Length: 171
Image (cartoon, rainbow, N blue to C red; front, top):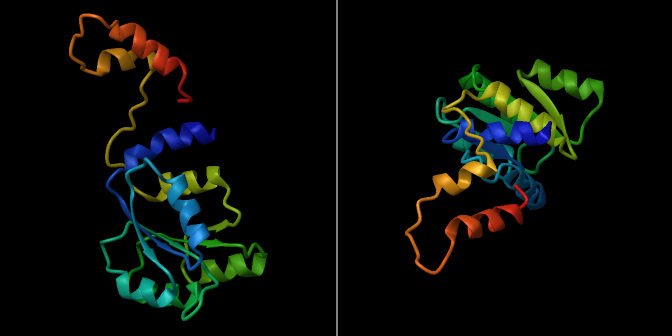
């Protein structure tokens, strides 16, 4: 299921989201999970940076950590919601208690994702709240040989070479 959802992420290419996360390792995880999607990701390291960077209409989603220095995600969400009621804000936190989930809803957050990240839920959330920009194109291995336009070489069999190359790749 995760592979099917990941294959749909390119339909969001060109979308801009803000990742509000103080931990560089968690930033790298999210960036890695979205690598290849062509989603533009702005990073804010705390709530104050998020509030300063946020402009209505610029970001299609905010992934908001809740526990950060300087300004936490709760306060940042409250301030952003005073400016903008429509942009989806998704809690991204280790806090999984029902009272914390209720608090994020009361502040106007649209969803609550827990760490460690459930990749399937992350992809589902992105696909749910961000509008498609194009249709995702899934290419069959057999079609790769026909899609790639390479010059003719007299001494090389390109079709055989590409089939061998594609056959050794983990697509």
